[in-house]
Image (cartoon, rainbow, N blue to C red):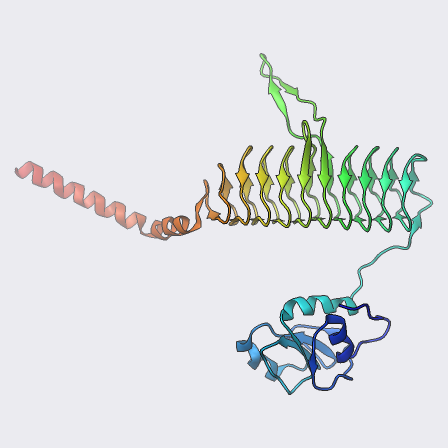
Amino acid sequence: MKNTPKNTPPTVAELADFLGCPYMGNGDTVIYGISGLENAKKGDLVFLTKLKQQHFLEKTKASAVIIPTGLDYNDLPSIKSKNPHLSFVQALDFFFKAYRPEPGIHPQALVAPSAKLGKDVSIGAFSIIGDNTKIGDNTVIFPLVSIYPGAKVGRQCLIHSHTSLRENIRIGSHVIIHNGCVIGADGFGFLQGKDKSHIKIPQTGTVIIEDNVEIGANTTIDRAALGKTVIRKGTKIDNLVQVAHNVEIGKNSILVAQAGIAGSSRTGKNVIMSGQVGISDHVNIGDNVIIAAKSGVTKDIPENSMVAGIPHLDIMEWRKAWSSIPKLYELIKEVRRLKEKVAELEKKS
C-alpha cells in the first residue's frame, strides 16, 4: 500500500493504487464512504468475498466494489484483490481515523523528573508517570493512566485511560492497551500455614509484552513470582482475560473474552483460545492449537490439535459424545427394560 493524502475523498483509481490492486471501470468515480452490501448508498465502496455471492451486487446502490481477482463485474467500477475482505479493511484508512491527541504533556499530568520521554509523546490529564520510567517516541498515554516506577514502554504505543502499568514491567513497540487493564499486578501465590492462614509468596518477577500486541479492556496480566510473564509479539487479547503469573503466550495467538490461564502454563504460536476457555496451571499447549469456547484444559495439548469440552477432548471425540447425549435417556429406559426381561427369564429358568 502507498501513502495517499486523506484530506479529500479518494477516487477508485486512488484507492486501487493505495491498495496495490488493479481496477476496472471508471477510475474517476469518487468514493465518500464504506458500507456493507445491504446498506450501501451512492458514493459507498463495498466488497464481495466469494464468486457465488455475485448476485448480491445486483441490488446494491454502492458506487464501487472490491471483488476477488477471479471475478469480472462490469456494472460498477471494481477493484480486484486476492483478499477482498483484507483490502476492504485497509481501505478504511481513507475514511476513518481514530482519535489521537497531539504530542505534549497536559498541565495536569504528573511526570517524575527522572522519567525519560521520547519524541512526540502525548501524556493526558491526571496521568502519573513514575520515577525512572521510559516512554518511547510517538507513544500516547491517555488521561488517568498510572505508570509505576521503572516501567518501560516502547514506540508508537497507545495506552488508554484507567490502565495501570506496574513497576519494572516492559512493554514493546506498537502495543495497544485498552481501558482498565492492569499489567504487572501480583500473581496469586499463597502457602497455607499450620493454622490454615494464607501466607503470601512474594511476586518478584516482571511482565514482558512484546511488539504489536493488543490487549482488550479490563484484562489483567500478572507479574511472575520469579522470572517473567511473557506475551509474545503479534498476540491479540480480548476484553476480560486473565493471564496468571509465569505464563508464556506464543506469538500471533488469539485469546478471546473471559479466557483464563493459570500459573506457569505455556502456549506455542498461533494458538486460538475461544471465549471462556480455562487453562489449568503448568499446562503446555503446542503450536496452532484451537480450543473451543467454554473448554477446560487440564493437561498438555499437542500441536495442530483442536479440542473442546470439560475436561477437553479431541473435538471429533467431543462431537461424538455430545451427539449421543440426546439419545441417552431412551438408552437408559431400554437398559431398564432389558434388565427386567433378564430377571423374568432367570425366574423361569
